[in-house]
Amino acid sequence: MTESLLTSPALWGWIASVTLIAVGIAGTVLPALPGTVLVFGGIALGAWIDDFARVSGWTLGAIGVLALLAWATDYVAALLGAKKAGASREALLGAALGTVAGVFTGLIGLLFMPLVGAMAGEWWARREQWSAGVYVGTQAAKVGLATWVGLLVGTAVKLALVFMMVGLFVAALLI
Image (tube, rainbow, N blue to C red):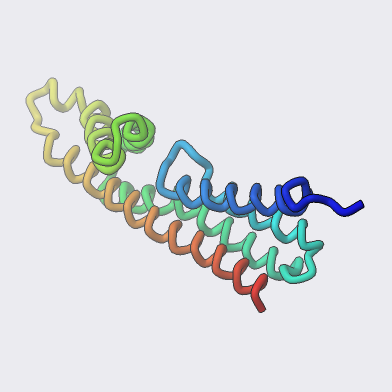
């Protein structure tokens, strides 16, 4: 007895693989989702469904290295931007909290809440100077902007790496 196409485990596996990859690409720019991990999971599932016939272990390993680079980019880019501006630990925490809050406030919030969070964190770190009459707004703005630019550059690099991962996977499937 032949299997119906709709009940084929391979078909459902490929649907799951493509869904993981698509959700992962969205998660690359939405901080609430582990984008790189989901994309790699979808690619690994696709390779496994195909019994690693077209996507070899070596190809999957290369894609894994790209995934690690994309994951590290998330943290390194924002830290380098913040460090260059002399950011405090509170500014980094504020940027992270602002990023999470941005998810719930739409695209504009997603773009600008990390900036606001980093500025608020830096201002909080320097609140004693503020109490003493020292103006700390310029430093807070400088740190906020540098952290924000670092986050945006990091997201762009991470997105490029994720598309390279998908491109290698598709090329391996088609060649």
